[in-house]
Amino acid sequence: MIKINQILQKWPQGTVITTDWLKKQGVSRQSVNNYKNSGWFERIGRGAYKRKGENISWAGGLYALQKLQGIPVHVGGKTSLEMQGYGQYIKISFLDRVILWKNPEVRLSAWFKNCDEWKDKLEIRSATLFPKGVGALSEARIRQVEVQISSAERAILEYLYDVPKREDFDRVNNIMGRLASLRPKVLQQLLEACNSVRVKRLFMYMAEYHDHSWFHRLDPSKINFGKGKREIVKGGKLNKNYMIVVPELRKEDG
Image (cartoon, rainbow, N blue to C red):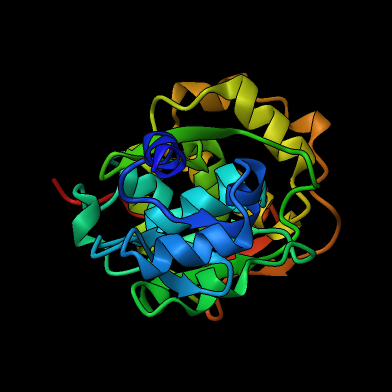
């Protein structure tokens, strides 16, 4: 009983724990089965458990991936901006979907991907937008669970990656208009590291239009914008500064 009390003290409410983590705490496989059979644990997938009867959100599962298993995946793009108050929704419980970002070589645990409690709410972006090791992440609390999310600077670039196939051009532009407090030093580092010519050009195009103060502190000469024309939206017009085919920008009313 002393062992289970120690586990419960180390186990944050609303999160998932894994057999690997339990093993590091000195808990044997047999003890895990005993705790499960005694009503302390409830299995949610292979090698993953929650407290018996506890409602677990996707954030509780993401906590285990990030903090216990060390898997480099984070809340990104539109979802991260919404969580920071830049999007249409302010309360996390109102989010209709959650976007997670990772590099293609990163594999998520099967218990996380297949969990019935949240699998229909998640969208996984698997792309090499930034090289491995590029950070610009921050911590956020969701229902008292601490998880890593993109900083606003990184999130807007991830959001632009989804234009126009998954996200509306005008909606992203409206959010760009609200990003007056971005950090130019962080932006510069991310733009220099970013692997997508299309994303970098589109970002600069929108940022120039909104004329945020941080835009004038960026150094385009250090950013690789590639060569040739890029068509972002069919039927748009060619912007000769950034050589992209885009719709005409307009600011949100009110």
